[in-house]
Image 1 (cartoon, one colour):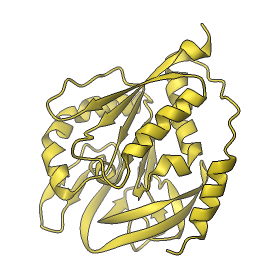
Image 2 (cartoon, helix red, strand yellow):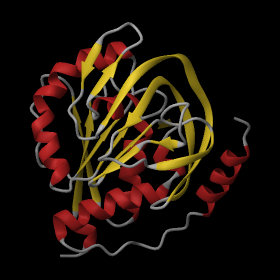
Image 3 (tube, one colour):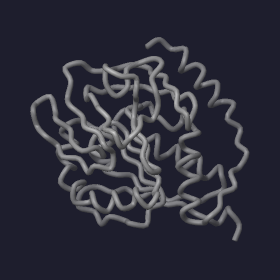
Image 4 (cartoon, one colour):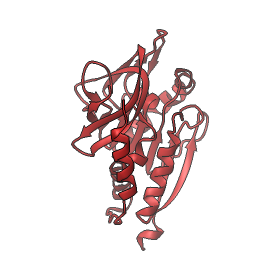
Length: 242
């Protein structure tokens, strides 16, 4: 079988309620990047009440308002053990902002509501008075320089069993007290970066694709891709004021 006949199923979690600030672009970018590496792709949406497809190769979820998190919370909690088992088995996942928070243990909103998370990440979030908004640049040992745009009022604090995705060099990140941004465990990436994240940071896309292909086919031979346009866009983004 040639690589061109191989395929990846990308599952988008809760796009009806958790898909703001361009987060749909992550799914589209991931699909296009996988196609550039020679794979056919299928994008499947999952919303509350749907039958959950347990054969997804990559899972992606975005941000939403607090009201959106409330809408999907019961359904997400019902899926919690399934998603935790998939994460522990190595399924690559990317979750942004609101779903990043709910992949943690708890989100206490500014209004005092406690939203229980599914605990894939050892972290908790509290609602803050100030929105942390602006262009952001951070450094990751795994992915190099990461660029994006943050827009959140939740303040996230990591526990002992999770490490940050990166350390912020311009912007705020998880909170206003340390330089960490996002979280990493197994093959799961959590982040506050919108904008969307993946079009500006193809190394993260390649990481998710490689892990999915290795899980499914046992080997991965990446294509040689011309990222010169992306690099110019990244350079421009890094020069923008906060």
